[in-house]
Amino acid sequence: MPQSATTTPLFAVLGLSTDATQADIRAAFRRAAHRWHPDRNPGIPSAAASFVEAQQAYRILSGKRAAPPAKPTPPTARVPPRKPDVFGDDIHRTLVLTLPSLFAPQQCVMDIRHAVACQFCKGLRPGCRYCAARGQIFMTSRLALRLPPGLLPGQCLVFRGRGHDGPLFSAPGNLIVTVAWKRSGRWQWNPVTLRLETVLRRGHRIRAHGGKARLRAPTGSRLDIEVPPRLPEGSWLRLVGVGLPATTAPHQCADAFVCLA
Image (cartoon, rainbow, N blue to C red; front, side, top):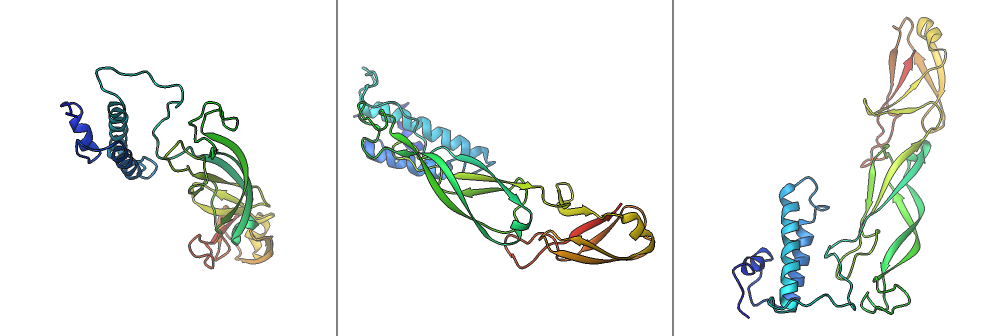
């Protein structure tokens, strides 16, 4: 079938020739969407523009290949219109952790309600009693998530392929878990200085005369520190290796700080 001047550049967007079949168009769009999807190229405007351009080309070419352009046919009631995304929707959850639990790898069990593809009709039968022709059904799954040590408040963990299943011919989305801290003891995370801090009780007495002070470490154990005498007000003591462990090297811990207020 001869192609018009408007249609021919659309094949070039997907890297196809004008005699490409419907299967070739679908496969080329999946390759382009997988390459230019905004989730895979965050903060790159050119990638987002290429993804939108590939979407538009796919929509137009699929419609033109399905019927002659002179006599457009209305959409059939048997196949509901679907957004040609290559990924399903992401699932966002918040995970609250205590401070002592951040010093060692741990496994967290989380119940996730997500959409899965209907295995009975794939969304192609209007009378499907399982999904009502939506192509998806909701179910609850229990996932065992392995968490690294040293997670910070507000940090996001991405578990790929654990989100909602997408429409037909698309991959599932991701599970995005945001970490939050539950207040534990007197230690707090300072988002400005990016360090663990606490205030020593009766710090004015120890600051004036010096001596030993005892406090509870972030891990929950007791910790004895030596305070020099005659320190100025608001002095900070650095506790080497008492802070959070590094995510990439759990055996290496950062420093924590104690204020003598």
